[in-house]
Image (cartoon, rainbow, N blue to C red; front, top):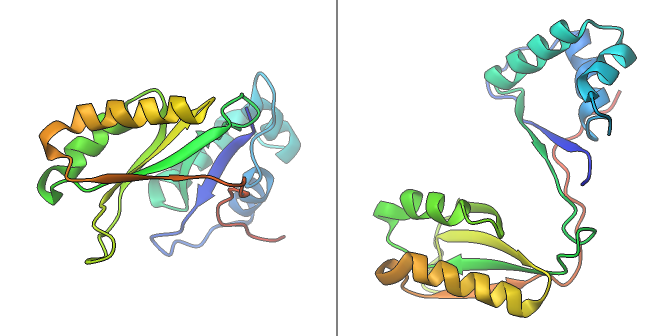
Amino acid sequence: MQQQDISMEQQDNRPIDEVDRRIILATQAGLPLAEQPYDVLARQLDLAVEELMERLRAMQQSGVIRRIAAVPNHYALGYRANGMSVWNVPDEIVGELGARVGALEFVSHCYQRPRHLPLWPYNLFAMVHGKTQDAVEQGVEQIALLLGEYCRGHEVLYSKRILKKTGLRITG
């Protein structure tokens, strides 16, 4: 597993102070790979763990930090076939269907996107991971069964190379 991802997105125009800035700089490439990453980080920043945690919570609640999440390296874990499945489902229930699809163990992320008619009728996207392309196809078949009558068409777009996934970065 890679380091954890801390994605930043300031939403409330609240200025960050120097300590928050140091926390962001220290975490934007990931948390330390340690049994107690927040303890290590607090020591590096010369902060109490409680203060670090409270500041991270406050920045997340205010929208400065969007999320703190693990970012697995699927290729390193043996999942070499990756397909972005795209689905045409009714807009009225896309959220409900997306939640069900996103809960599947082989789907790493699932989200709604706008259609671009007439060329692109798809509004639900789900990344399917498998060790082989056949495994991805089986996952796509499971999604199609789950969507049932609500599936009005789909495609699978396969990854050809790994792109570096990072969020917004600030410099010192």
